[in-house]
Every structure is written in C-alpha cells, then in structure tokens.
Image (cartoon, rainbow, N blue to C red):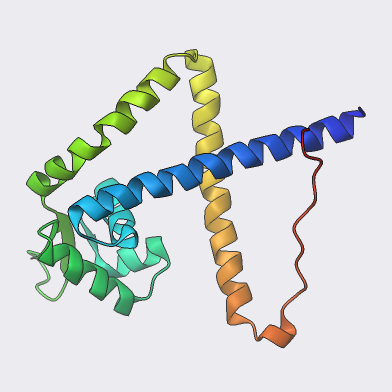
Length: 175
C-alpha cells in the first residue's frame, strides 16, 4: 500500500473511532439527562456552564451557538429543575448571570463516576508525553469543531440555491 493510501486509511480509522466515541458520549449524556428529567441539549448547556463558570445568558448563547431566545428557554428549564439560578450583578443590577447550583451538580455528578473511572483506567495506559499529545489533539479538535460549526451556520444562512455542492471525502476503509 502506498504511503498516501496508508495515511488515508489511518485517517479514516481515526475519524471512525472519534465518531464512535462522540456518539457514545452523546448516548451517555442522554441517559444522564433522562435521569435528571431534562433534555440532552439542556444537559450539554449545563456542562458548558460548569466549565465556563458563572456567565451571562449572552455568553452562553455565544459559546453554544444558540439564539438568546433559545438560551432563555434552556435557562428556564434548568432553573425549574433546580440545576441553575439567576444572579444579579452586584455592580450592575441590569446584568444577570447564570450560575450552577453546586448541590445539584454534586447530585448529577454521581452519574458520571463510571465514566470518570473508565477514562482514568484508559489514561493510566499512557505516558505523560502521550497524554500531552492527546491533550493537544483534543484542544485542536475542539477549535476545529468550533470553526466547522461557524462554517455550517454560514452555509445554513445561505439560500439553498447559492450553497456550494459539498461532498464528503471518500477514504479507503479497512477490510
């Protein structure tokens, strides 16, 4: 097999593995969301809130790509479920922050213990150098996903008759 074909096959294998992992992560999150009585997309927003910390609804809209109207609905549902609260800014009472409720996060967190344990077991098989490579890859993949999301939004904002004809690349599959 030529070097180019071998690389294409390796890239396809990596893409397939990442897609499987991503899909399983979504399914895992859906299970947690079902237990919490919220939508999976609301749980993803909750995760972003946890990672970002106390943020405004505008910032949450910016990070998620959702409209401010959609974010209002998400925050209303999360607040009703007792997972977040709205807090007025001490300096500017017009500004409202969305903050996670620590006790509620602790309750949800228990459902992530099996995932955390599984990932610790996986990571224990890698050296520090390999983990730094994986971290670099994950951070770069995140940036790539953000760029792809922006490109998709741009594509969807373009009238269908003016959209480019996009085709997925065909890579050789392993037998």
